[in-house]
Image 1 (spheres, rainbow over the protein chains, first blue to last red):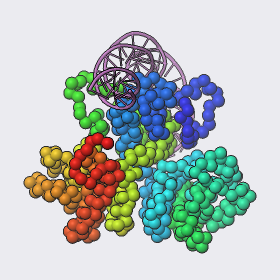
Image 2: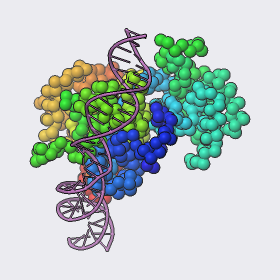
Image 3: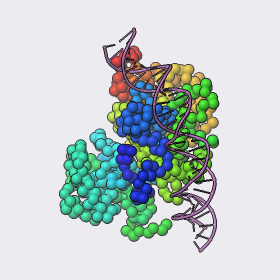
Image 4: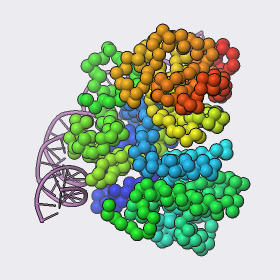
Length: 284
Length: 284
DNA sequence: GCAATATCTCTCAATATATGAGACATTAGG
DNA sequence: CCTAATGTCTCATATATTGAGAGATATTGC
């Protein structure tokens, strides 16, 4: 039960306070345990003993589940050494990306943007209070970004995140900002965002232009320019950003890049049925 | 039972003919069913009805499992529309790639190769009778290859596959060649490999040089040059290839590319502890 | 090289667990 | 507005999972 790391389950956003004792699980405990085992392996607990401990389940049972998972290719087993995530997960992960029409539609545009700028380009969506990276084109300059597809980052301190925030009511800005500003994890030496009053002013300015800047707030030495992607109902459904090391990102270049990134984002938006004007028509 | 479309469950390569009646399943039927449900969604069966039919399980049960999978983020549910693979699978897939030290070690080298050649570069390993793509750097020329990370392809008719075959006894070459040559699926208009006697001659030549050619055998209009990657015990554990459209791949260029690809492969091999000379020392 | 230790494999009875039919609520689409 | 399909829920039943432990196999330490 300590595995509940990400509450991204939107369907059941309302918990049921009426059934306190029955909350143990909706139905398939066995299935959930198996999935928990996969996540144990994903988070570095690769030995049977450790997994059994984390799951609070006898070794015998864990072993049986692991065998099934290995047989299906979800895990890979090196006898007497440990378990690793298996090839099936790679396959399914890639397929999951393909199934999101967004990724497929956006690909050509972010590739073009990457080629044009020579920098790292990201595509991301909101997931809970974080940005979820759906795609990444590495820089052609040879410098590697720490970001990865499938990774999560705070919304308020990343270029993509701030672009996504443009689609939210300003009241949420505060929450998200404070969540990052007060976050105890300054691991990796994140400088964090500007103090609130200034942050709000900046965001308001971004909102007018419809593109955002990030000045080493998420990672020292990395600046980026982002813009939101909208769907047919004018909702922000994703965002893109161009990121690079500070030396490649002087203020003037960022100012030039703004409209470029916005244009790319708009191109993707149009693929999703978005119409240039601001009117939201929910009907097809 | 007509659901087995993709026999990608290779892990248990040796079947056990001694236990004919017990083959029903190792242990956790519930877990396996849940995983099967995921694969249904992966292969396009996105409605509850269809999944229930393919699994031979009542809707009620399927529904419960799907709920659990959605709650854990393995699936995504659009009410009254269908199910999609969820973000957790993207995360796990990426993590699975990271956990393979091979991918991380090889990355810089294949990136360098991609930049140097301007073409699509692949990294793959053997999985059963197929090559499994572990990484791919897209071409900077704008032309997109059909290959994808996580995909499988026949060994005998791909550049990477043939490079991997260099690490196998020639007796297996025949099987693999015939498997492709007699394959009834000529879908996508695959021309297929050369007839056997000639194929063997070519392979023998490749073996001497330690790099291989593929001349539109897997896909019309695509040529590639591949080379095997070896580990500390001199075993072939992976292969890389450079692929491009025919106009970019005249015979002379392929001849030049051979040593280049081999050098890149050797660089990765050295990262794995491989020593230049041909002697196999199993001890550290 | 051998012993000690840890991991894997397998069996079996008990029972907790998932099952599945069906009724009901909700939504989509014509 | 109505119909058909999907989602939601309950409950008795028996199936399928569980978990302890003993034995086989491999790894590690000495």
